[in-house]
Image (cartoon, rainbow, N blue to C red; front, side, top):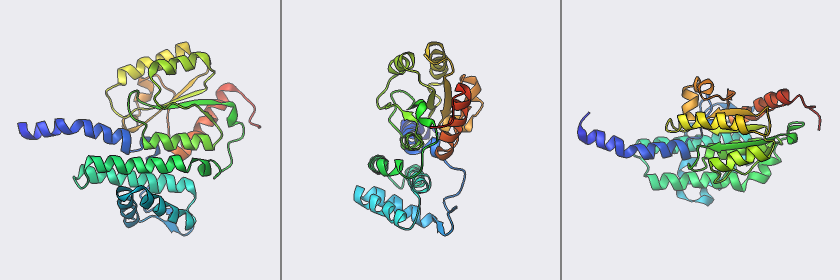
Length: 268
């Protein structure tokens, strides 16, 4: 590799990290192709994702209108989130990597997708019944500290809230604040999204500190994010309990584990 190409790669590295942190929703990444059938007669083609991505680049009204069209066609909201919104975010990231989209447009487009998830929260919470008894459990879901709230984590929080968990607001939360919360409140589950390998030693120390200082001796720690998805052995290395599945699976898997660890009744 020439010095010039090496310099270009190094200059691009911070943007590549930002892509993983802000755009690619690690905890909602699905193994299925975008064209997977949804329900009996609904499917999302590649051309549909292109249209959604173009709308997200255009303006907020365009992308929200395009997503509303899917709902009017009978798409359940969880599939809109996991197939349409997450799929659009991944396509935007691919466009940026291929130099088909500048970083400013990428940031604006993904911010609009995040805004849709925020604006639709109340209707999303009504879209399915909660898990019986989940209201008994407190959960903290966070990105790496000092990193932006990712679209993936925002959607993951939405699924946990919909399923009835008591989800703490972690916006802007730093490590000291997390430790204070763990010491003062009986939190049952902490979910950490690991987006890069920069903080692995710090994350290992944090997990150890959370267990040592937790008011709840049965605290469970769930990991997710791009780094852990490609290196699942990190779950054990970092001292966590398990690797989160996709957003529509993570909440129910966590419920099974947390309710078993606390031996609580599964009735409302």
